[in-house]
Image 1 (spheres, rainbow, N blue to C red):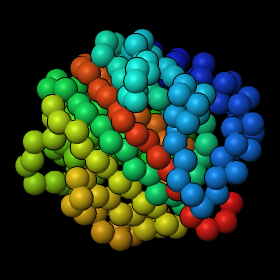
Image 2 (image 1 turned 180 degrees about the vertical axis):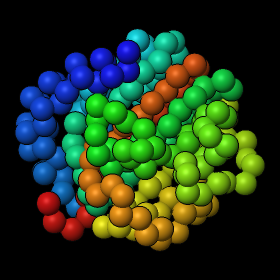
Image 3 (image 1 turned 60 degrees about the vertical axis):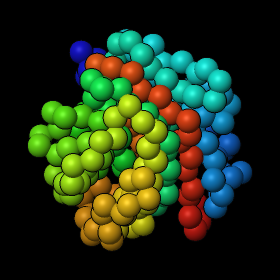
Image 4 (image 1 turned 135 degrees about the horizontal axis):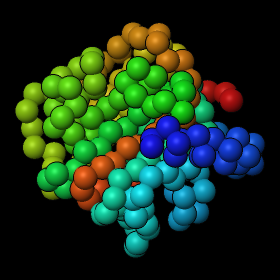
Length: 197
């Protein structure tokens, strides 16, 4: 079913990539929001989740699904402020090399809130960095990820959990957010593209 949803989304991804990229270029080197128009135009929305925007928050409270970014990036800095419920399973994927088959085999996966994440607890970098036990559910958290060529850095609530990790598996690709089995909210999802386009 996931493969079907992603395949359907591919046509929208290819159609809108050029126009969205022109908007982003205007903000080169400065921070921009992936929800700047207060809508989901920067994303492909897949699945049966009830994604919606209310006030200053983006949320899903029923069903499950994906937000897959329309802009592939190599070097970037992303910061998101998020809240996950007790039973929520949520993951952020960066540099997705194949948006038809998103997994830790095709992208870097950060476990936002997923106790069944292959032994990597909440806040861990799947397959790479295990975070010591900490309670990040039912509270607001700030995640920051930077990718510069083959080096990755990750901070969670101001604490660096991955420092200058050298990894060459995935060179470029869009962001993807997977949320299932619970409530998930975001106050922000901002991106900086350093250097030149």
